[in-house]
Length: 234
Ligand SMILES: [Zn+2]
Image (cartoon, rainbow, N blue to C red; front, side, top):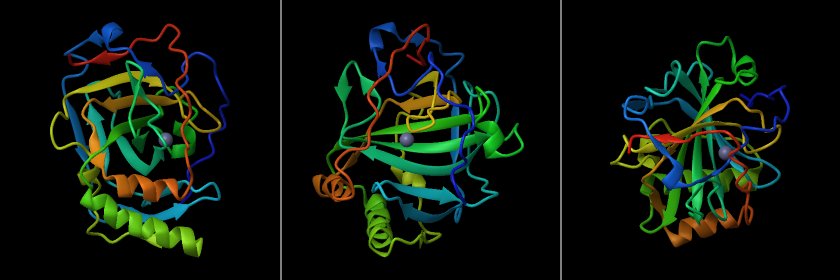
């Protein structure tokens, strides 16, 4: 299953990522009151590594893994997840983290993902910031499969026991930033409601090094905020 090619091209006023300036973030407890993330066993089917060294885990076609939140206009279904490294894409007050995971979901209000990514609220991306620290055990399992796929140049199956929830911070789920933006890779479609978790998870130095053997860096630089507002619980 392929990430859909979004037909809508580059816009100019809601590009991603951004630097989140915490002093200008609007506290909106009603808008950011709740978030529910559910991963169902077996929904993550395979991992592939592209010619640039970027890996992607794809979800099965009718995955029931989803995200629902007070700031999201509907239920969004898991499509795929991937990461950026050699730094994070989103920065907090100019601070760059070591990596960033993106869980990509599509709005079930639309018929298919290809349609969703032509709409301003078509995709929801959950961004998890990563800093250097303790190793993430679940990511170790994924790294083995990524390396296998990188060598074989073929998709590698993910065991049903793999639990993506272990790539989400254990606490502070209610603390996040949200804003309207777009894809950080071509065609940069402005179709994303972003949710950036405030609490980072950790990868070990070895895990970050393993990623850098695939490619040094695959991040887009922060873009202009323009008229947009960033919201959070506090
Ligand atoms: Zn991404």
